[in-house]
Image (tube, rainbow, N blue to C red; front, side):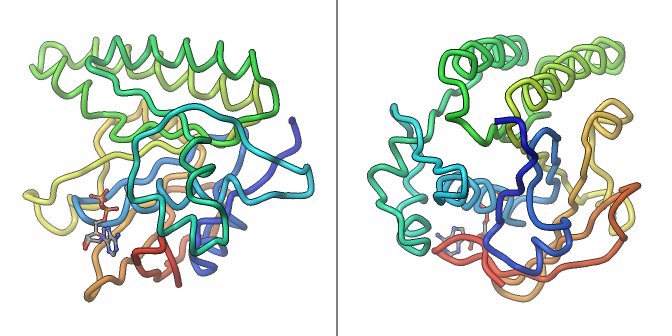
Amino acid sequence: RKEIFKLQTGSSNLDNLLGGGIESMAITEVFGEFGTGKTQLSHTLCVTAQIPDSNGYLGAHKHSRPHRLKPIAERFNLDPTSVLENVLYARAYTSEHQYQLLGNIGAKLHEEPGIFKLLIVDSVMALFRVDFSGRAELAERQQKLGRTMSKLQKLSEEFGVAVLVTNQITSDLGEAEAAKPVGGNVLAHSSTTRVALKKGKGNRRVASVYDSPDLEESEASFAITKGGIDD
Ligand code: ADP
């Protein structure tokens, strides 16, 4: 599978903002505060990646964990049991382990070519923040982060999958600073598309594309629902 495809997010507003959806053979970074919908977007994509397409995609197999997927699968008229079975889940305990897991994932993608469409790294920065917490370790952190991001880029291109990384930010720095993701230049330069999420009223959220050379800077309003991301 080397043709570029776009995974629908569940919200046509957000799809339009992204030029059709989350693109394969590229890295999309979604950053925002706690509760902005990063996880629900990830879950929605785990389901929409399994909607049969013109390539006749039928899914993979094996275990998974996420229980929030069931109502999303139902919304897209997919069988919840097989949707869950088609998601592989692994938990990383250190930033080094996270990197090693990418190696395992590469082996898996190689073993079952054309089966997987989406690779999500939830909270890509979290373990780096723990493992390299001091100022003196910043250079090393950025070097290791760069290695992880290069690996993700390579996986997306070699296996034609869409890569989504989420990045939780905190807003104690005030409105202006809140819009800035951590990860510095390394993350900025290795993500193809960076999406900022902000809270709106109730279940409403606002997405904007951050720093993109290709996409027009504009906003999309969407909703977080039990059935996933929606308009
Ligand atoms: P993040 O990963 O960015 O912290 P989430 O994707 O977990 O955010 O979204 C959290 C928000 O979405 C909360 O405001 C919560 O009320 C809402 N939410 C989470 N799950 C559901 C659900 N199953 N149905 C409706 N709203 C939900």
